[in-house]
Length: 235
Ligand SMILES: Nc1ncnc2c1ncn2[C@@H]1O[C@H](COP(=O)(O)OP(=O)(O)O)[C@@H](O)[C@H]1O
Ligand SMILES: [Mg+2]
Image (cartoon, rainbow, N blue to C red):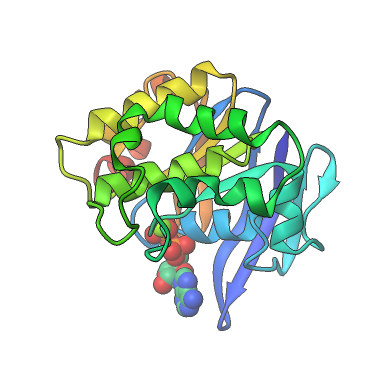
């Protein structure tokens, strides 16, 4: 459903992405793994239309995204939970999660989309009235992922969903991702810590200095010493 073909992105005359080719199929969970600075966030931001490629293709459900503004890409069905969560502080948790049902009213009824978000992270019901500034890092991650789900996206992009979280909250997030998976939702997840890769990921892409240096299953990655050297030092 998502196809990146030889994608290259320059930022301030530096070649940040160099010929990135990757694929996410219907219902797949795909991980993009690499050290900090490898180019993972730039890849996701390029898919969302925040960065324009110098070369290469980005196609979603057979349609090119490279000429579309971000809001149109969202409407095609791509939800994005960025690395920094970006929860709106002047809105409550409930309002943050409802937001996509106001901005993108098409599709399934708002109540169903909101129910889906709370189904994935039931703990959020306790914080519904809390302001967006009164949340821990883990709660912000949950709100950010739940908000992306309330779009009822066909594909969800998660940028380092475990980054900077206390160990106590990590199982809540990984259970949430497992539940998203069970819904048949396609997910592309960027990750810098090999320990956070779900065992049931369909495919892993390892990125180094803007290039994909490996593509395969988590099992194949673990049997490849060169890949393990890169990804186990990735955290
Ligand atoms: N706005 C920017 N201006 C200059 N350099 C940037 C910018 N965004 C990213 N980069 C550079 O691009 C490279 C890849 O960054 P990024 O995509 O954030 O990597 P990752 O998410 O894998 O940590 C880094 O070297 C980073 O310094
Ligand atoms: Mg990043």
